[in-house]
Image (cartoon, rainbow, N blue to C red; front, side, top):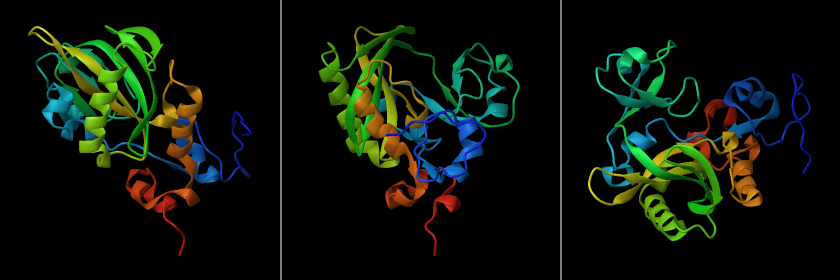
Length: 235
């Protein structure tokens, strides 16, 4: 494949795939005629508790600022402000009244990034242990079987709510009681995700589907395309 780092000029590059940030994407995807697949804002909050291990709500930044308790607050998809534990809502940074996810505070013993294509985990990587960067391939990992078993159950039960190409982060969640459990961390844009120690060829398969030519957009993915009208087929 021909790979090009784009500057301001994007004319004449239709039919391309895209990998990069959402801010730049908003300026160039129409010229490129690329369809960007994104998980819905409410997917994580709508999951059954058995897959999250914590209470999560989709709200707004203005509502989150009223919190009087500690909570983990993050934008659903884009990184418009740091995803972090905030002691109270008053500690949140200024910004527009955008959607946010508000979650109970938990501790992740390990977190894994999974590249999912058509409901199947194509490759993956551990990326942190107890919040610290610790990249290691999923293949051959001591937790590989457990990660794949949890992901298979999740995707079978809730995969219809995701685009055909997406990144899903899962983790080993420590609990106040003895033992631990697996849970979903979040879903991410495959075209704006670090693959860490995952197999890059297999990860690329997912990235290409997640941000490819609008003419090739499948009907089942149309609802996950940010600009539905632009992505709709011509009459």
